[in-house]
Image 1 (tube, rainbow, N blue to C red):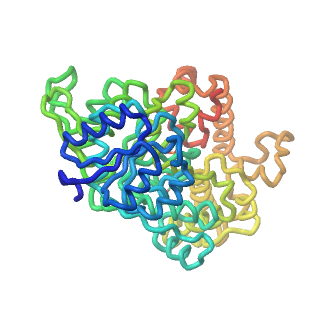
Image 2: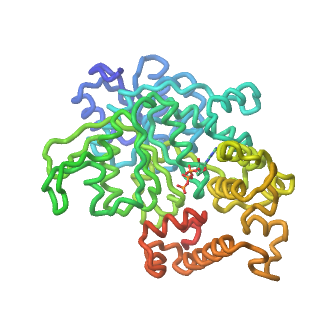
Image 3: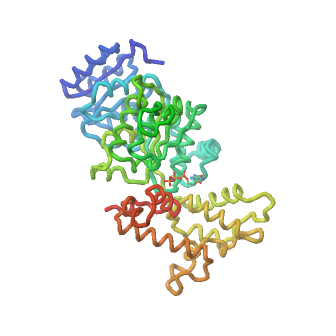
Length: 466
Ligand SMILES: Nc1ncnc2c1ncn2[C@@H]1O[C@H](COP(=O)(O)OP(=O)(O)OP(=O)(O)O)[C@@H](O)[C@H]1O
């Protein structure tokens, strides 16, 4: 642990008032601070003295351009960096990792928030391994063997494995985006399983399943009698992931008031159960996932900017399956061996089936592929999964989309119903411009029920928002 009173912090910023007050406040908390107003002085100090942490604005005028920092950073890559900026721009995951950005705060920063971040970063110094060379076969093979749960060897997947491997060893919060079914939860679990937190809980928190009014009670817990319906004491989900990882799925669906509460929990790692007066301290890594475009959500005022930047320090964007080349074939083979009942004669796919997998667009991504293989296993009669065993939307690929002749062709009832449901949901969600509450109301479903159906069909409501 570096969090001793003598931890030395370099603060670089061109705003004199900010520089002075930050230095004074951190000194009062027992840190030794060196304050510099320009990039050259920062570089000089870093060459001359030992520091445990750097607080810096990346967009300072003068020399401290990202390029210079990148070049210089090699000499002090072991020192964590907290970026504090008034002009935010989310770095790519690789950039954040290369620059060793441990946290990203937006000005104006409250002192509690700054101190919380400093304490957290100093408490979890992390060594980020050097990047692997994507052209290096041995490095690639090692990564593929290290992460057997993540199937795929297309270039985007190899790059992804490299990022996962490096962020797993840090303690930075992570935002994972990508279409529904691209494997966001699989990636979050892999990061947890390869991190120092692996022996503790990985807690999935589905944001669509928590009503706004119960957010604090579900997350932080409550005591008996603290509100109508609180019939016994309840531990909150966050307590379950102390020293572990909290995975917030469907983060983009979180209403504004809950976003504020989540931001506080992430910043302070302290929360007070409903009806209690003593706060609880936790040590949790936050990984959040969404299939919405959060940048658009921020721009349109539906998602808090500060929460977005806080989580987006490491932003992992998962590619859709249609952009992952031969991965669909590898995945199909993996699912066949995993899902095949013992004693079943089926062991392979016909060439025509594999060709269809390659040409299909996979709107529901890997989840849709898994469902298609599972269904085909049940239907197949011999050793081989034939084209005819595939669900109707896939079989349309061969007909070049010429399904107007007969909408359902020789589809089974199940296929026809499935296909009709898909069309119904797409047009419904289009009509309501991606608004799930309105679509659910028209369909006579709960919001949660609508979410589940859309997920099953691989329809992303975000794609229909204007
Ligand atoms: N790279 C992978 N290798 C093997 N299986 C995978 C991979 N990625 C995803 N899967 C499988 O695909 C299915 C969907 O994955 P997952 O639930 O992680 O997707 P998601 O992006 O979180 O979906 P959603 O946005 O709908 O919550 C799961 O059955 C998962 O096991």
